[in-house]
Amino acid sequence: MTEKIPGIKQPELNALPQVGDRMSFIYLEHCTISRKDSAITAARKEGIIHIPAAAVSVLILGPGTDVSHRAMELIGDAGVTVIWTGEHGVRYYASGQSLTHRSGLLMEQARRVNNQRLHLEVVRKMYQLRFPDEDVSKLTLQQLRGREGSRIRNVYRQSSKKWNVPWNGRDYDPQNFEAGDPVNKALSMGHACLYGLAHAVIAALGCSPGLGFVHVGHDCSFVYDIADLYKAEITIPIAFEEAAKNPDDLERSVRHHVRDAMVKSHILERMVHDIQCLLKDDGAPNSELVNAVYLWDNKLGTVENGKQYHEGTGDRS
Image (cartoon, rainbow, N blue to C red):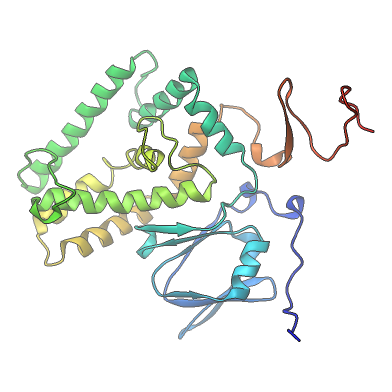
């Protein structure tokens, strides 16, 4: 007879802490992850730490992590998102459930992607994040792209001058990576790290990585949209600096430098904030605080779940 494994009872949705109450991302590496009662434990030779499952929103697992079945049982019951990444989130490999049981942010993303006016509104917000001190609300999409192109070219020129690294434009062959010059290889390596973190955050928030606004048609379109917001600040300057240093292991050096810069600049937290701002109206109610499940109605949009309706009346029996 199989022994019953003790464990906590699966909580009701309304018993789980709201996402806003536990927007904490915890990164673990080189440890064994298990559980004790309602706590996630992370053990290594230096000792064991206990993490209350109800206080965690996203658990990011880096290299060298082993996870027990009992830990995953608790993680699933507590509604914690698990994401498997490279070192400090610089590669995205896979993910479990999103940190929310609600689909409000995903539905809003889909609504805005498929409405031309709302789609353009999100694109304008993305460009406004790049030009925080300017009013770009009157510019056309073509003008916005031109302004952004000029901004990025200027970042390239300044970085090239600062680190005395020749720059002849972005030129790389995805099929022959080693044929590129050091700065172009460093750019590709750094951007890959930024994409990894953006993908992890998008998955954790329950959004779709494929529903982009500036980029479209690719299964990572939204990943590229979000990562582009931080390239001028993080990956482009680092690529020129590392190319100037010319380290023996360029990829490792770029990866570690980008990782440290993202941690120092709180890029993960900023991504969470920026995605929510992009997909929510100013002053709109927090969709995380409302009912999780509705019934679809072709005239009313949604109606309350958990009721038995009389045919043709909409009244509960």
